Amino acid sequence: MKSRTFHKAKVILLATLFVVIVVLAIILSQPQQHLVSDIPELEDDTSPVPNFAKYENIEEKKRAFFEYLRPAVQAQNDYIMTVRQYVQGLRAKELMGEAFTSSQQEQLDWLLKEYRVDEGLSREIMYRRLLKKIDIIPLELVLVQSANESAWGTSRFARKGYNFFGLWCFVENCGFVPSRRNPGAVHEVAKFDDLSSAMYNYMRNINRHPAYAELRNIRQRLRENQQAISASKLAEGLTRYSERGEEYVDELKQMIRVNKELISV
Image (cartoon, rainbow, N blue to C red; front, side):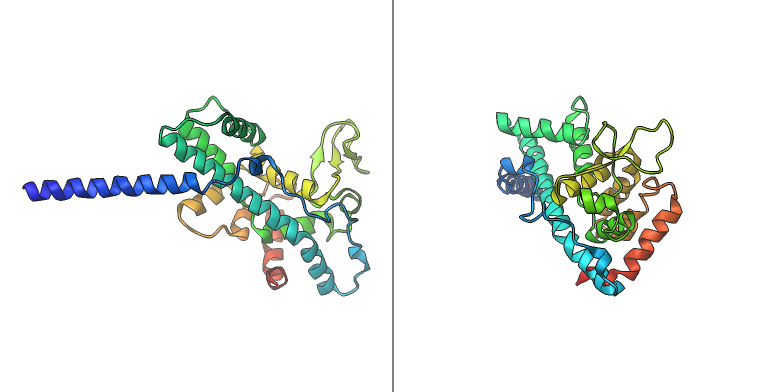
């Protein structure tokens, strides 16, 4: 009986030590705090958008389009994973009973505001909602959706304002006035100063807007089941991105299948 009790106590002790080691590893592996609010910028992201209309060969056009946008997508996803790791570190630190520095608290407050998470929630729910929103969007999905929304980079919104995503804004002179805007409507098509800003705003929009909650639900379930974050599966959460609904989603999934080899190059 004593040996069983001793064995049980040993197992509990080892499990506790394992948890402590994991938590400490998360804390120690945190990125530098300034990286959280330093949105990544590419060196040449203010260069004019290439003239994709000049390509007569469709495959060459697609390849050029993907090669142009790929670095910006990857940079933003790397940034998102850095921020995600930072939040996980804060969560672990709090579980250990350690106090935040003033800088860490400022960064957390900024993230809560940036991703529209209520700071009045219980701490565990707050972290869960924040981590649900701070997560990557697959390269394949970003590339095909930007191709779909910008007519492969040839729309005037893409060419003159780096808006490859059909993003709207609602302040006068914030962008381009759509030629077919309904009477009484006030929205404009957003204009950005560079590609990095446009990509950041697009990903933040997907990650925090209520219309795309289902995409985030799908992504969270994949995480919980330790499955890959699939572009085709996440596309199913974009029915509200377009008035075309399911037809729009089907088109995105078809584009992912058709362009798989070109994207993976």
